[in-house]
Image (spheres, rainbow, N blue to C red):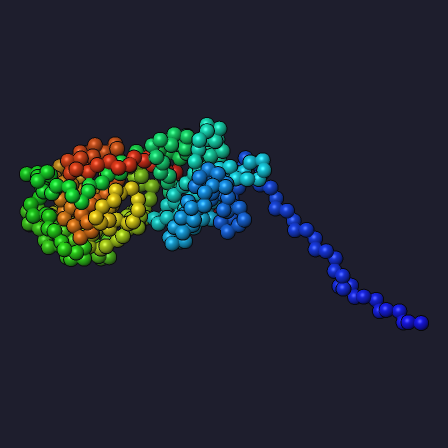
Length: 364
């Protein structure tokens, strides 16, 4: 009689694995934060870029390449979902320098989308991932009326209509067209490279000095003074510390110390001119070189009415020569004096955008 077989161990025929728990369906119509590295991020970003969760891949790939190159923080991604658990709208806040963040909304094509987009806006601003954030901004094309309504309902304030201007490399010399008998003499000194020192100008006019860390306080003081009575994005005044403003200016384009200049008369510093090598892309027309961006031109109140702005623009034209001579800038449409100056200098409008801002609630 054969011996009875030994009983099989408990794990000889293991029980089939339990089915993985199904992901909870996001609540319909309620803004939900989307983990940037989670399974729903791709669909939410597709909606952000194209308005469809199954949108074309090339824009998403290009966006992700840009995000990796620039180390963008995507933790401020939010979405609103429909009945089948698919994202219908999305918003993203991207932290920047100077304690700011930029807000992006998915495309809006119907009035019914405005309410959910406003809810997304409020959630993205209140749930921003950065402590100490001073300002959230958004830039829209002037024809994005539905997004404007959503931002307004979401708590943002319209700051300005910005005109993006470009002066091509082949434009006529500025010295003749901006001639002004009241302008300081001896201001414009062309330089072969952006790092060359600036020679003192005629003592009856202005003396220019390039940026150094030791001159940082003087630069900041003149920039702060230039805000008095300004017509250029006046609603920004007082919302950020001057150190944050300076950091934001420095992050524009490609920084070269020799392209940041402080100008003094006999009474002391009176004006600043901040230029940067133009970064690739953007709204600039194609040309022989990237040119420069005029980041900021500011004159203290005591120096206004003396032609300093026109003289500094002539200097900017000379300083742009090593970079292809083209100059780009943005100006508030409600700044008529600056617009006249740039129009006389053959700047042309390439793009118009509306700027929106909000001061986010403090993080607790």
